[in-house]
Image 1 (cartoon, rainbow, N blue to C red):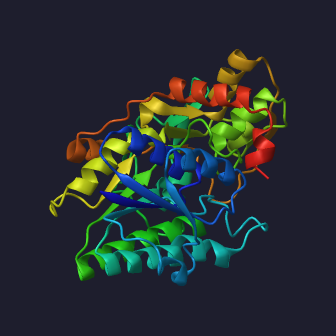
Image 2: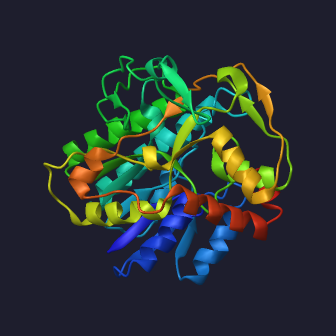
Length: 355
């Protein structure tokens, strides 16, 4: 099978490529990347050693797709992944939409031309912010959790946010760009009759993740703690109790392989894929882990939240378990140790990847 991976030299794209090649499925992989992200050139060199053909191309440019080789499936790992993109005063809202929405349209046109299937890697941030921000929570072992006995919104249980949860705006410009991409992709699939799968991922993390606070929080936190860089708990009283779940990209591979082989139209097109409650952690708990691993380091505090901040974001992946017999296999302590070892071997990682 011939696969085209967009954003192949990013953390997720490059990690998936290595894992797919290691799966022994006789895959031929070609990747495209625009190399905007610092650190992507390092992944380009490593993938080239594995025999992966990498083409310099930008998903925002329709003409860049005209000479790409034919693929059986496209895995879209190209995106601006920051929930603050377009609203932080540092990035362009127009460029966010060009990357995440218009780029998807160009990919879909490629799929239509070549009769290729598409796997769209989406995000947990397509879910509505107001009910999540207003969620009744309590602190347990330095982490928020839904308050016992509280009435929870539809689609949310102690297991997490399911696909039934509201996607009504506001969800951030980033979330809206991904939700719109999902809708357009499913319309193309129905209209032009090619397979599309949408996987809403929780926080993806692992060794080699680019380290920025708004895009790779686990990698950023571990690298900054190890180097004694300034760290700060922001929002919700400044205690660092906000929780996210964590998933290693390698755990996506069984689902991706199954989706590329499956033509069953009765299966749900959209599923959550995440670490779930078993792989969830607060920033305060992450600091404790770092203190044990690297030695004590103080963290500053700022009580006021940022736009679109939410106290507890854990995805419920039970639909993926039912549909694809899937569950995450790489547990959070293993992911953190993998990042820590990488941080120890790359003392300049924040400068390389976070600039």
